[in-house]
Each structure stands twice: as structure tokens, then as C-alpha cells.
Length: 369
Image 1 (cartoon, rainbow, N blue to C red):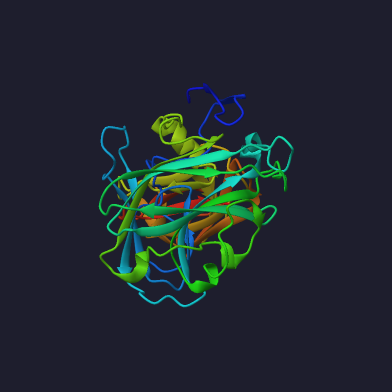
Image 2 (image 1 turned 60 degrees about the vertical axis):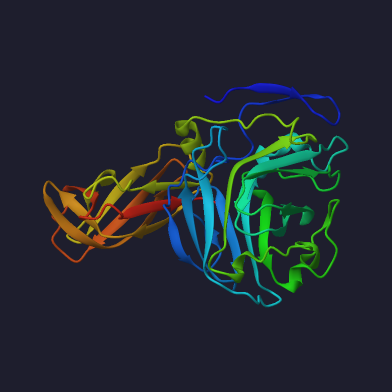
């Protein structure tokens, strides 16, 4: 269980209490999807809850690194590595890391009311280059944003960064499970996103204003990399000395919070692991298999699978040709799937889904924002 802490808001001295960190997996310890290479398009990446937005700007790998700032308790960081360079981005190209939250988790900011609160984002960052990049808050509910320009002043050195953001009395956040504020770190961009004026106060979103001043150019050489960890978001205005200490969660708690959005079955530990529960065949070519999720997901999930999967009965395995969600048995708590084989099942017999000789085979249920 996370430790409850109370502290005074440095701006208005109003007592605030939080039970869990606003940022999920800010210490980068959960990476269900595993390290990724050859990434050229926007997607959720290896470290849970973090997303990469990119438009035609190089090729990238995302790995969980043990390179961290020393003496602070961090064991992991997210490492972003350029593997195919693009030194001359087109005007509409960009590359930025982001993290998105549900509106119902951000009501503490009281955004859109007369009592709206300031906020502070802090993190540790390390890059082989020096230069400027933009950190942006984008209210996706009301299409408003605010941003600050930050500088990496020393190459290959862990640096603690603190970003102060003003309150916004315009645009209340929906108290729902829908996407709300998105935090972004813009590491490379084309001129379509830099030709305006950086919004130092909350304003209607304009693409031309989003990343003004960004010149880090992380995608200009395959030697480039950036690492980040210790991401925290607090109510109130703080500096590097006054901000509350990073709030660590035990691994089980952090994993459960991540599994609200993504659950990966297939741990990579065994080559013939059973995935889900035992189901029943409905014909000689199909079986229905239930997956009772370890936590309630944010929404009814979608399914993707990879590797070699098979239906098993005892020691006999029959290769699966397709596996899809059973739409009549799909909820936030459990998901039924229909697994199809070419032939060989016995109708009305128990079967399970197994990895077929490959520890990397997996099934992923996704209810991300």
C-alpha cells in the first residue's frame, strides 16, 4: 500500500494530501511490453504508461536501462536511442515522449474553477547532447496547453529538472476515465511546431506554439540517446529543494496500477507457459478460453498476440491460427477469447492456450488512453 503523505502547497499554503503518485510508473520499473527496436511510428512503448509520438522522424529503440542517478533509490530508467537518423526534419515532423492521465485522477488540480491550482513536474534526465527541449501540458478535454523551455546544459550527466506550470481557471477536466492532460517532452521537431510563441500561460492549443525553442535535435545522429526517470507531478509550486521527495511504490502496487491499462500474458520465463484459464472446445476447430484479469481495466480491452501459440490438452499441442476476442464475453474484469486451429480438436473438451516452445509468445490486452 502506498504511503499517505501530507504537505503544504508552496503557493497558497493550503494543506494537500495524496495517497498515491499522480504519475504511474514514474520510476520506470514496470516494462510489460519488453524492450523495443525499429520503432518508426507513434505507439505505447516498453515502459508502461509512456507513449512516443512521432511523425516521420528517424527510427528508434526503447529499452529499460539500469543507468540511473546515484544514491536516490532509482533502479531503472527509460533509454531512448536513435538508430536511424534524420538530420533535416520536414516541417510537419516531430518526436516527443508523452504520458497521459484520466480526468478523474486529476480533479485535485481543480482546473477550470476559481480555485485552480498550480503544478510542478520534476524528473531526472541524461543526454549525450546539450540543447533545448520543451515540456508541455496539453489539456486534451478542452484543447488548451501550456509549456516551458528546458536546457540540457551538460552532456552525459544526470540532471534534475523542475517545471512550474500556472493554474488554469478555464476548462474543467471531465471527471471520467477518458484521456485528460498529456505531459510531453519534445526532443526533436519540424518548423510547423516552432514558428509561433511558446505558451507560458494556458491558452487554446496552437500547433505552431507547441515546441518553440526546441533545438536539441535528438534525431540527427545515431549516436544520440536520452534517458529519463523519477517523473513526479505535484500540486503547487516548488523548486528543486522544496519539492516533496519522489514517492516510491512497491512493485506489486505499481504493476497493478499499470495493468489497469495494459496486461501482458506471457512473462518470458518459460517456453510452454499457460496463458489464461482453461476453456472448452466448441467444435473441432475452435475453443473458447477465459482470461480473468488480475485487476479491473480502465475500459473493455482490445487484444493483440505475437509468437507461437497453441491449444493444449495434456501434453498435446495444436497450433493456433487465429485468436480474437469473444465480443459477448468481454468486460473490464474478464475477457473471453476464441482460438481457432486448422483441425484436431475434440468438441466439448477442456483446452488451454499455451506458448508453443517460445518464451516470447504473448497475448496483450490493451485499454490505454
